[in-house]
Amino acid sequence: MSTFEKVVEILVEAKDLEAGNITETSTWDDLGLDSLDTVELVMSVEDAFGVSLEMDETMQTVGDVVKAIEALK
Amino acid sequence: MSFCILGTGSALPSRIITNDDLSQMVDTSDEWIRTRTGITERRVCTTETITDLAFQAAQKALADSGSSADELDLIICATISADYATPSMACTLQMQLGATCPAFDLNAACTGFIYALDVAAGYFSRRPDQKILVVAAEAMSRLVDWQDRGTCVLFGDGAGAAVLGKGEDLLAIQIGAKGNITSLYAPNGWGNSPFRSETMAKSYLHMDGQEVFRFAVTSMVQTVEQVLAEANLTKEDIAYLIPHQANIRILDSAVNRLNLPQEKCLTNIAKRGNTSAACVAILLDEANQTGKFKKGDLLAMTAFGGGLTTGACILRWSK
Image (tube, rainbow over all chains, first blue to last red; front, side, top):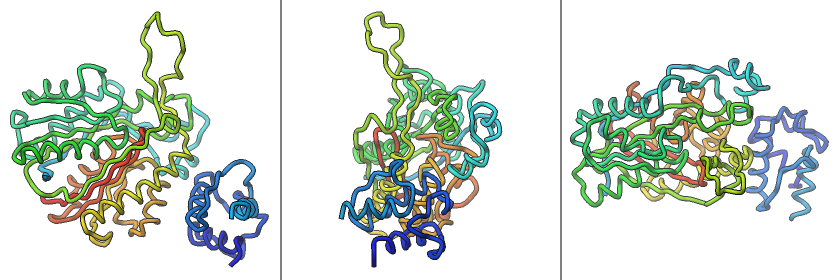
C-alpha cells in the first residue's frame, strides 16, 4: 500500500470520509476538516508510520502530509 | 489499602453564560464553539464565591453519605483558583463545616480530584477506618482572559465533593506528571513588590490548544489502559468512563482510540464547560444523583491538565 493510500485509509476510518473524494490535492477545507481534525490526523499518521510529525502552515493538503511522511521514512 | 465512596455532592453558580452571550464579548459564534468544543453554556460565579460552592458541595456529600462534619478525619481540596492563597480552601471549609480535622489544598490542575483520591488512598492505607472529605472546586472565571476567545469559551465554575470511608472499592489508581511550563499555564501575580524587576506574563491562563489536544488524547488512552491492566480488567468490564471534560472532541477521539462504546462515556461538558479539577467530581455526583450507577458497577476515571499532570483510577460503585 502506498503512503497516500494509507493516509486515505486513516482519513476514511477516523473521519467517515469517502475514499473516492480524497486526492493528493484535497485541502482540509475541501474535506471539511478543522484544525483539531488535522491534529488527530497527525496523531494517527504518527501511530501508523512510526514517525514524528509537526503540523504547520506548510501542510495544507493530503499530498503535503504524504510528502512529509515520505521525507521521514 | 483502599476506600469506598460513601456520598457525593456538587454545586454550581446560578449564572448561565451561553455561547451567544460570549459572541457579544469576543469574536466567536455559537456554531464555532459548539463544533470545536461541544460546549453550549457554562456557569460562572457572580455573587457567590468558590468557597461558597465548595461548602455547598461538601454539605451535600456529607448528607448523601449520612456523615456529619465532626466525623471527618481529613479534608483535601483540589483547586488552582481558591479565594485565598492562605488560608487554604480546605481550612476555610473546615471552619464553615464545623469540622476539627487536618485540612489542606492540593494543586494538580484539572487532574486534582484524581490526585486527591490517590493522596486519600495513602491515608487509608495508614488507617483504614476513617472518613475523608475530598472537594474539587474551581472558579476558572478568575483565571481566564475574558478577551481571549481561544480560552474564555472553554471554562466554567463549579464544585464537586465526595466523602470516602472504609472499603475496598479503589481497584487501581495511577497519577503522573510531565513538568511543562509552556503548554498550559497561569502565572501568579507579583503583588506590589518594589524589588521585582522583571515583569511576568499576564496572570491569565495560557494554553497551546493543539499541543494540549495531543497530550490529552494520548494520556487519556494510556492511563485508562494502565489502570485496567493494573486491576486485571478489560474495557468490557467498565460500566462507565468518567473523563475530565475539556473538550468533546478530545473525548470522542480518546473513546474512539480506546474502542469504547460512546454511551459508556459520561459527559456534561455541553452545560458545564471545563471546570478543571471539579469536572470529574461534578460528573460523578450528577450520575450518582440521577441513579445512573448500579451497585457493583466499575467506573474508570481519567483526567489530564496543567503540570502537565495525568491520572486515572478504577472505582467500584458500592453505594
